[in-house]
Image: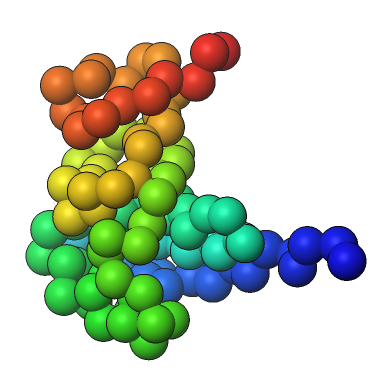
Length: 111
């Protein structure tokens, strides 16, 4: 029997708020969950102030932070990486330009 296709779910929509002059007042990344038979992957982890939302969204999927085994970072701005340490069992993958001091348990893409 073939494996089930991965399930993709946006568990926290992103947000960008600018002033009338274009100054960014608030920016938070979208957090996407991909679930397969083998992996529970997050794409980005957002800001620390979104931690409760992440926990609740994972709980709604019958998951805990410990169930996440991989994080893919689109880039290393703080609104994409601040909750990395919430996921102790996750390997973290990022572009080689991301400074490792900003990331926990970083695995760099080879290109």
